[in-house]
Picture 1 (spheres, rainbow, N blue to C red):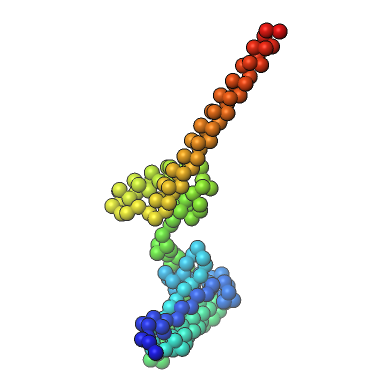
Picture 2: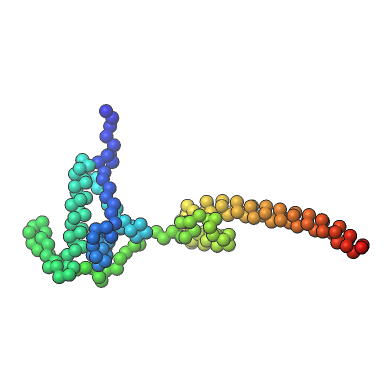
Length: 191
């Protein structure tokens, strides 16, 4: 009835390496193999495919790719021979567990703690200094301010106004208390 959407055949696969029944060394190898598709904060690998015309083809491709990744992560573990065949029938040695290669998470941008939690949960002084650091970083690197700064500034303004209102109300109450105490003190001194 209508036009087909270009992303209609796209398939996304998300999984946790811990759920695959792999040992710690095998999970580390799998994470190194998938690279930037691994999200260390969520501990999830996310892969997508839209190479083929139909969803079933893309799903099958991702399933086969996951199977190959699992086999490759297991190879070289506990005396496995490490011999896999290439497409041309030749053998290659894949027993390397990549211990010498560090895990690279540079693709993940570190967000400051203040951007991950509500600003009201931090003392005002901390938020002020975090905003100041963000302004300095943006000026130094020539990049725009982070998204959280605007919301944090608004929240700080509201909190400061609220604090000033409370302080003013407290002063008024203190003045009233002083006025009511003075006549009582005069009565005692007259007696």
